[in-house]
Image 1 (cartoon, rainbow, N blue to C red):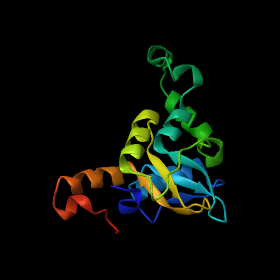
Image 2 (image 1 turned 90 degrees about the vertical axis):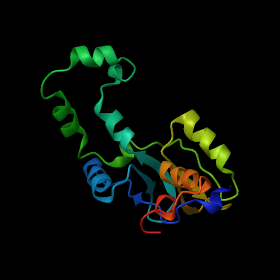
Image 3 (image 1 turned 30 degrees about the horizontal axis):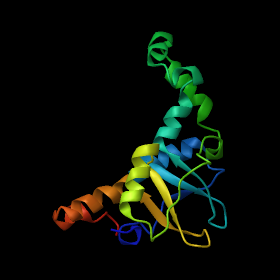
Image 4 (image 1 turned 135 degrees about the vertical axis):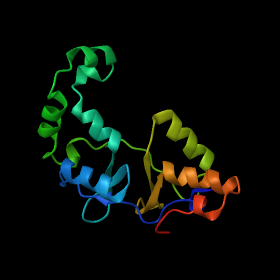
Length: 160
């Protein structure tokens, strides 16, 4: 199976100047977990996933030390960290180093990359590096369901 058979041609995008609060609002409203961050010419500048926002709320020393995070926690700490973050532009926390795929890549390559690098969202670009769409865990989930011959309600995304 190739990416051209499964990719979403209507990627969710966000401006690099949008606030993190705007992004979280859209995550909730649109029932999604990631965006492609694009400029006004639709050039992909980065990716932003919900885990990037969650990671930005954690002090650096907590990220690899769960015990420290548990020991240093105090009431109101989460709220305080979120308040410091919410008005910053998404460009401050988006992933600038990100994988891309083409429509001619195969699904096995993409799944291996998703697992190796804990990816949630990957832009699909043409040979000129123009945005064509996106692969997320949802497209992989629906490809698995399709291959397992599950009914169409499991294999088709809402809105497609």
